[in-house]
Image (cartoon, rainbow, N blue to C red; front, top):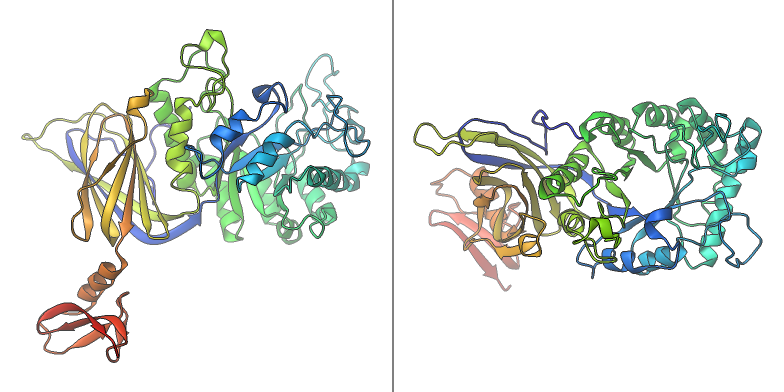
Amino acid sequence: MMKRLLSVVSAACLVTAMQAASITVTISNTRHQTITGFGAACCDGAMCPYGSDTQPVKLLYGKESVIGLNIMRMEISPNFKGNITTPWDTPYDWFGSTPSARIVKERGGIVFGTPWSPPGDYKTNGIAGGGNSEEQGYKRGELRSDCYDDFFPWINTFLSYMQLQNVNVDAVSVQNEPDWWVNYSGCLYTPEQQVNLVKNYAHILDRKKFKGVRLISAEPLGFNPSYSDALMNDPTAREQIDIVAGHIYGHPAHGDLKKSAVLANKYGKEIWMTEHSSTDHIDHLPNWHEQLLFAEELNECMTAGCTGYIYWYMRAHWAFVGTGEAKYNPGNTKNTLLPRAYVMSHFSKNVTGSTRLGLTSSVKQAGDAGAPVTETAFEASAYIKGDSLIVMVIDTTKNALDLKLNLPYMVKSGTHLLSTGNEPENRCQLSDLDITTPVNEVMVPLPARSLNTYVFMIDWDATGIATVEQKEARGTTQTTYYDLHGRRLQQPIQGFYIEKGPEGIKKRYNSL
C-alpha cells in the first residue's frame, strides 16, 4: 500500500485540512521530464493460451484505442516451452509474445524484453529457476563468472529471432528483480556484479545491427537505488545504460524510485517503472477507492521523475482486460475492458509525449460561514504538450471542492475528463469548460472521489500580450512593438504584431 500522506512537493501535492473551502493550484513553466508512455506486460499466465490470443493488445494499444497504451513488456525466456517451428534450432521459447508484440509495433508502440533468467547452463545452480525452493535444493542462482561474456551474445540471438518475426525490439533489460530470490525463473546479482556485467561486456550488445536498441538496467524489486547509483557512478557502465528501471513493490514512488531518479536525471537517462500491481491477486474486483489509489500511484510515479510506467499483467481481474473467471463475475467478462483500463487512459491518452511542469498548491480555509470539509486529500500534476496544457487532479474524499487553477499561459478553451466510479456512466465523461475569453486563472469543479483531467488549449497570441503587460508599465506615452510571443521589435513587421501605446494594447496587421 502506498504511503497516504506525502509532503507537498513540486508538481505533486496531497493536502489534509479541516474546513477547507477551496484549493488553489499554481502551475509554473518549470519543465521536468518528458513522458515516453504507459504500458503493461504480455507474460505467461495472463495471456494464456500463450501467444494465441491477441485481443488484449488490440483493445489496449495504439492511438485508435480508447486506452492508448504504447509500451509492451515481454519475457526473454531461457526455456523452450512449446513445439513451435522456428527459423533455426533454438532452445528458447521466444515465440509466445511475438503475435502481440507485432501488433504493438504495427500500432507505433514500444516493445522491450526482460530476462527472468539467462539459460540454466550459464548459472551457478545449472537451472533457470532462482533456487529458492526445496525442489531446487535452495541453491542460489547467479550468472557464473565464466559466462559473463555469453550473456549479451544470448541477448543478440533473441534480438535476431525477433527481427525475423518482424518485430524490432526497442530495448532489453539486464534482469528482472536481481535482488529477489525466487523459486520460479530468476537470477541474483549484487549491484557490483551488475556493474561488472554492464561495464565489461555490454559493448557486445550489437547496437549496429539492431539499430536503436537501448539497454535498460536491472529492475530491482523495490527500485533499490544502490543498483542504479552503482551504474551511474561508473563512467563506463553509465555510458552503456539508456534507461534506469525498477519496480515499486513495498516501496512508494516518492521513496526509492525518486532517489534513483536523482543520478539518472543528472546523466540524462530515462526512468521507467517496469512492473507493479497496486492490488495484486485480490479476491474481488477492485472497488472505486482502490482505482483512485491506482490513479495516485500513476501520478506519484510521474511526480517522482518517471518517464515510463508499465503495469504487470495486462489481462487479470485486477488489471485492464477481463479473464472470464466465474468467481470474479459479474464484471469480469473475458477480453473486455475493465474499469482500471479507463483509469489508466486518463494518463496514457493525455500525458504520453508531454513534459511535466512544476506545480504548487494551497488550501483556503472556509471559516465559520463555510461548509466544513474534513479529511480533504488530493494530488495533482501538470504537463504541456504542443498547444495543450494538461492538469491531472485526484480527490479521494467524499467532499466536492472548488478548484482554482493559476496557469502559466493564457488559455482560450478547455475540456474536463471526469471519472467518479467503476460504472460505465461514471467513467471518462467529457465536457467543455466555460471559457469564453483568454484567461490564465480558471475555477473548475473538483467532484468528490474523482479522477480529473483538465485539458486547456493555450492561446499563444494572448499569452504574448499578457507578457507585454507584465513587462511594460501602464500609462506610457511611447509606442512600442512586439511579436505575438511578446518579444520586443524595433519597428512593425510584416504580418501580425502587437502595438502598445497611449491607446493601450492592440493587435495589428501590416501587409507591407
